[in-house]
Image 1 (tube, one colour):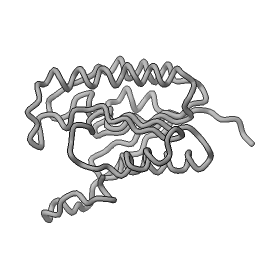
Image 2 (tube, one colour):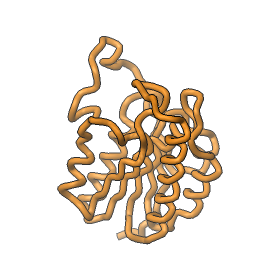
Image 3 (tube, helix red, strand yellow):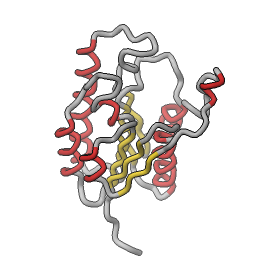
Length: 183
């Protein structure tokens, strides 16, 4: 068996499937007995039941999902002070570093962290801090980052980058997000 080399993986692009691809990697890792942590930078403070969170309750402590966000920023009815979103994202970064350096995880997924770098005219965290996390990643641990518009510096630092491209989406027909598929 080959020795493990922890990869930094980025799922980006305008198409659906970034979080779904990361969750697929998590399922594969769990099947090998790995410890997996997902830190979600936007999900949280919503009355939506996310399938990945429900599954994590059943598979804890091998699988953890931490919804540390305060919901999507400036869209979908968000009325929270911007600073509350910034504080939540900074706390998520700090927790990422702490958990990553603990040595307790084989795979950490930073879901929608790339959005937090500056999407829709807001910036919750600094690029230099995310690049520092990539640099500090333990050599055998895998790290997955998701979100649209990955900056060139993140792409350069990654070992694998996949861009999801939208060809057709049901929302354009007025079909809302579907439980079990989208959340």
